[in-house]
Length: 135
Image 1 (cartoon, rainbow, N blue to C red):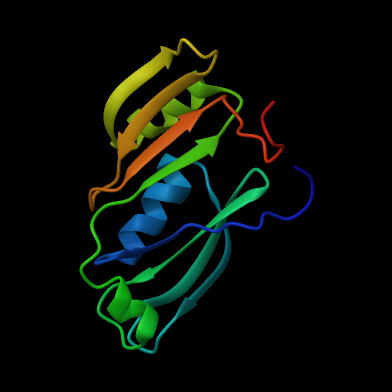
Image 2: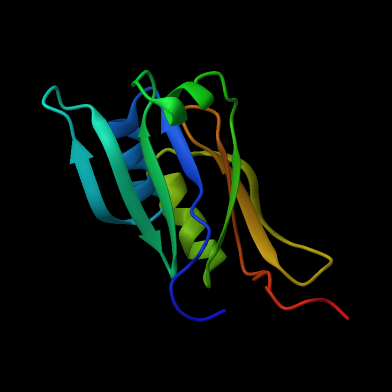
């Protein structure tokens, strides 16, 4: 799949600033845009990793989207990376909770799993799903 991504996982956090630190410092995402309210609340942020992006914001805001996600539970997000071991080491260095260390999978991927401070599960691995139909 070439070009800009067409799917953007969106996660709301109680402490979006702490989430930004975990994603950038611990997981190596790059801040693309961060919009804050006058009180410092993260209204909207876009973070890049490879050719993909994730959007995040603060819980407790007004609007249809915020209300729809108000009681949502943790989510799972998979991110394709090249060097699983180096990525894992960086996450460990920044105190990220590791659920599964780098592990070779039967389907050829090398993955690890981590949980952020608000319970979302982040999977990082070498398997890259294809948009092409199977078969």
